[in-house]
Image 1 (cartoon, each protein chain N blue to C red):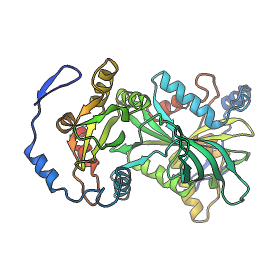
Image 2 (image 1 turned 90 degrees about the vertical axis):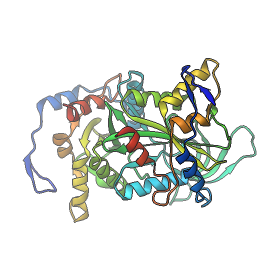
Image 3 (image 1 turned 120 degrees about the horizontal axis):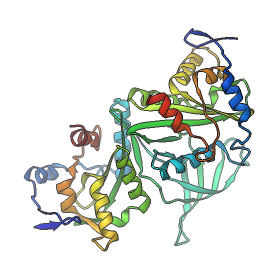
Image 4 (image 1 turned 30 degrees about the vertical axis):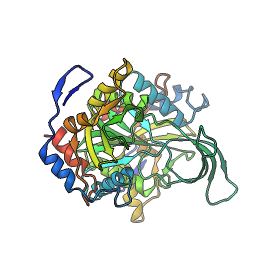
Length: 203
Length: 203
């Protein structure tokens, strides 16, 4: 199978044997344990923090507060608020002195990852992080296969640019498999993405 | 005037002439312009981002959402939510490839900065950032004098530790003046803290 990159580069998809074996082995996914992708990343971050491996936090969801109730003396109750579109990625922190930044996204699609899952602001933010020497990637989760991959932000930015000039509106799963890095699901931590970061960015 | 550090170190307070002249010159403070400390730091971060100097964002305030109203199709309205105690500092980002992290705090006190303005989690977070090789500081604002200072987190952590063993519950303004770095209020950006960061951590 031949896939065209947005930049015109061609490559032949090679289904790695080890990978498919790996995937079949993973019967114990985080969703089987009733956890969302976000839960399992947060769980991993807590593990990393406890083990003093890295410090990564999920940013709170930005909201616009319209009204609050201060009548109860002990706590302020927010009575009207709305979700904002995030202007950055969801996670950032520090690993081995380096700034790391990432977004976690999941899809029910089987063959590709729709780019509409990203906001313009997030793509601009990723570009900036790269320009300033940070490490920036995306953790993709394909729900249908319970497969998780780490993909460098440059590839996502490249697909995003291509889309703006009429290119395809999604990233083929085959590209994520080939250019990205499979993250097996474990116990402690559940999603050991730092092991991949170490191999990809610190080797 | 002699001040004791929590670590027992003694020093003589020297009121720097340039500094007091500087302070007197600053008639145009951000509060005179109707802006809060947070507004003016956000304003500075937008300036830095536009000029491609650094990428720093304020983290959204963490809240616990209790109930939402989905009846209106276009937007989700949060109808009950509560503020959470933040587990990290408010600002983080990247400058010259390095992870930077800080908190901005203000007080109406005239002679010292009360430590109760910090949460345990924030102090623990600061310690961790230092351990992992990040740059971590606090921007202090004294409302009564309209004076803003940048102080390295190590000094705050040291006072915090001392407090836990019965030491004083605040950081004397004189310590912040001597060990910290005065940040004059300007126009673009309003609080040019990166200039200080550059001098203190990249010199």
